[in-house]
Length: 573
Image (cartoon, rainbow, N blue to C red; front, side):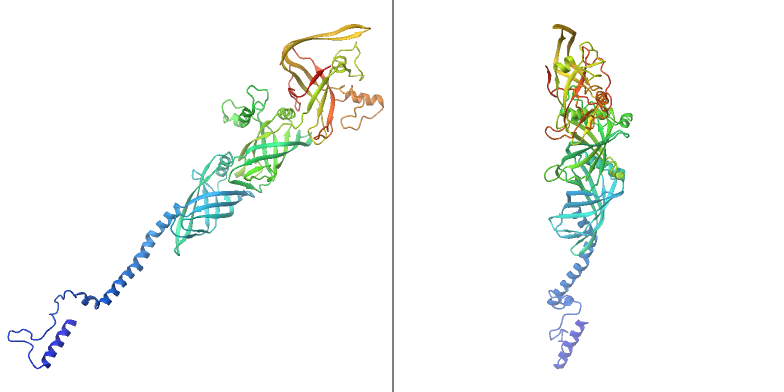
């Protein structure tokens, strides 16, 4: 149309000039535009865009339209994949985790974690419910993850305070057992959340691996043992002790309340006279828990000793902090131990009194929720008594040769030397290691020489100025000297003895003497300090067979049984 308009204008202009615009050959005599439809190189673009300026504006408009349309489409299609790729490349590391206030189905969790953003832009991670899974994919529980600001190419520290709600109690208990046994665990965190980057929200799926170092409690030790009370009808002895241990794990426990644990003991592993006995051997064998139920089910290792339960213990205000519990910075825990009356508990008491260190297995807690039931098995080292219970013995002419008449309270007559009337033995010095009064009775123990040897002895007295051989003794090579025991008449040597409670005997002189001669208890006043709680008593000696081990009776419950090697001097005067 534009071309035809220009042609008509040129024809009109030629007519006004008064002449023909064609010559004799039919060619135009004035310049005319090229016929319509003919290419006008090199200015063809003028027909499309008009002027060069308009052409530039058109190109810019096309480019802007492409940016406004194509880029959002690319962000919509590829953006979530790119964002999730950078998000999954971020690493998560637990710096410290604290568990506290357990209830029936959840416990309070405080976590300091470091997340390293590998993306090139900063972003905000919205709060969401994160699920914890073990290595096998079992769901352990879930927590609420807070909002987190992720700085580009930098680590950020998260402070998470939430409640961990347990989903699978049995799986949680099994994983906790491994963790508290010192094993390294690999868990994972999963959840759906919104990540805001460049002002745009992106739905992402969180899949993060969590590595937990084992939270083994080392150097678990019980010391400063003190008798508190006893329940004779229930056959229980209540003892207080101080508990100390150390932990280097990032896992901590606070506000756990009072934990009740079972106490198990391996008598053979703790026998100080077992061949090959030593601290390392005692700990290795003493830590093998093999309950009667486990033994019946074949769940114990080959050759393992069957453990015996000796009681329970209560740990008050139980907590685990990184460092040493029992140091000036973190005081020791207080524990109440309830020992059952049994032969095994008697061995524990006797070895403790003989100052032997022992290893006791604790298993618990048994008073918390199902997901925490018996998740911890630890080896507790029980220190021996700080003082010797039996500090020494004195065998003199009066005690060892002449003896005391258990019926009259006087020295034995030379013609009444039978064991049914005359008690011979030694004066034993004992010390109370506790801060309260207690008494021992039915005492029976053995005295040994440091090495084997044989000896002959003749008991001789003078009668009417002439030597009289009362008895000759001959012993084959042995290190066993004598068996000592308490019996009625043991206080014949002490006419001023005041009885088991220190209040004296009642009645007239004859009744008081009869009561004193019938008494077989050894009372201890409160001890614990130098010289306090010291008491001497007479211990009746019984001859041994020629070889150690012959005709030994079975020990009764709560018998203090100790081989008195290095326990004190035995002087024969």
